Image (cartoon, rainbow, N blue to C red; front, side, top):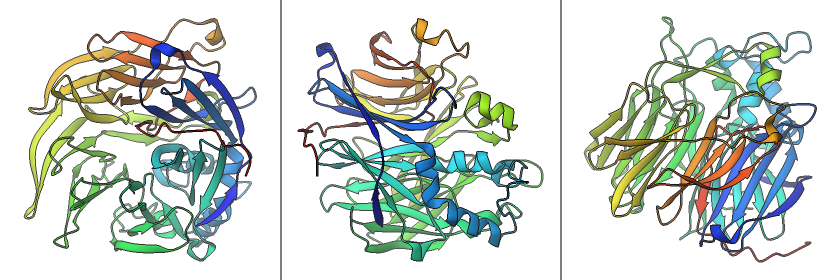
Length: 450
């Protein structure tokens, strides 16, 4: 990986003493500006141990430009070149034009904590990722080497604190663009290990699978590795082709591919049983928008294809085994789910569209209740009549609170009562269909310079 310092605007703010806990939260968003609703990346870092927070703002153009040459070459090889005259015609995945395609690929999507006050902001599917050093308040763009110009990273990395290895995913962008004409075409894909700041990589698995690989995680015993695709490609009958999930038994050198989930975007392991894993099934597809709609909303459009669901699996040496499922007719969701302990009860918190959190009993996959998220009425938002949408959630370390990001605020919600506590109200809308994290890394002693 090659690293380049990014020009970033850093702004500090204080957190009230009432929010004190030994935890931090990192939230990646895209923030509107006066002239453009999709104007810049904005990452929020909140350290509740020190009652300090700060934001890092980076021009979206500075994120796009390092990979634009690779994008153009791969597109040209598949007969969909980028041109001034045809840039707004639907030609790419999901019927997107080039602006939608680049917006999707470069949106900040997940965060990986790598310790020592450093956090990786992973993009949806692009050539690099951003490392923010909370001690030095710097942002660095790490890009795939030019010799691997056809490689695009997945949306997530998994960090092993015992070895300092990062597990990441990459796939062929040329193969991915070939899926525009042939949605069932396999794509060259690999899982690899690397160290932050080192160009060396070690392949863990390589073969043909899919593109838009979206999540990767390894269980506590280091036996099972799970990688999930966010597909949403349509077949000839306009039905969504089920996303693929790759499961690797790293100890016994076995592998399985699940393809029963409509949109298998994310997974999480059980906090008590390392061989139990939960898979999300979002059940929506991306929709092409006109240029006017795109500029007005500042976000890509989605269409729900029915209720979503969460599947519960046990991983065994003989293969994965389904042991439970949760769904409801009103369960429409975009992204986040978390499994955690709340007062000795194992709970799944899952984000429901447009403004709900579903609480589910993880042991028997039964419904507990819903929490409705309400944004405060503020003079700051008189410029916009659009309702606030929930974007990302994460539980506190003790399981008592839920950190919630909407398009207009950050809130701390009580799990037991559903009541909001601290609220950070934003001025401009924030596009945040992504994943915040809660981290135990709070030792951010400030170091200026370097």
